[in-house]
Length: 246
Image (cartoon, rainbow, N blue to C red; front, side, top):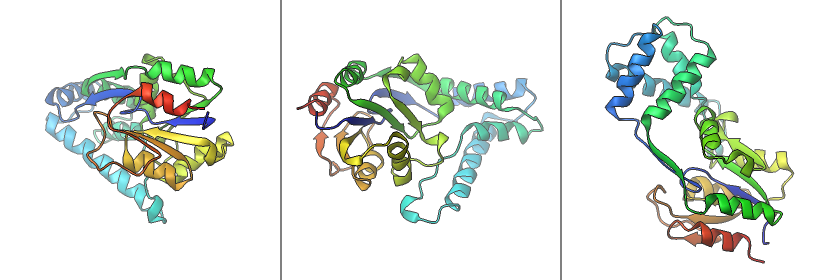
């Protein structure tokens, strides 16, 4: 094999997902969820506006803590947003309540989630061939950990790195380096597989990793990035051929 360490993005690379955080039913359901626990917002629109305002405030606060503009890609922990929504209405919610609100939010915003064809087989085959397999995802742990369990993917990885757990997100080089350093990986032995030309491909190249870009149905609208391999459409069978080529 060309590489002994394969690092995968999740959403848009292994997992097809569609969520809609503008759906009226989401905010109606969330409004009722908060009301039943004493946190009363007057309308779904008020709750929606406060949610996005708190997210922006927390993201801006994180940016000001970063001095290196080339690596200023902070990540927040979304559970604190849901906790603050309780607190602003006088409810001293604990973290369990905040996480429950967040998971319901995710459930109500999701249209579907499913593996791309061949995803599980690809990960299994790589491990059979002796390759270490890692997940490096811009994702919220309170959402993604549960979704990995539902999709039966947790055991497929030798290490799972979610941006909300570390305070950085791709393409921040520090997020990549955390994985490389914790696992003792020489970047020349590693390849990043992802569907985002900036977050996955440019970020990985910046730390010396090889790259495989897949243009999937939820890739950003962008020109094909500079990568070692560029796939114009989702084809995990072809990815397997590339990764396991002798």
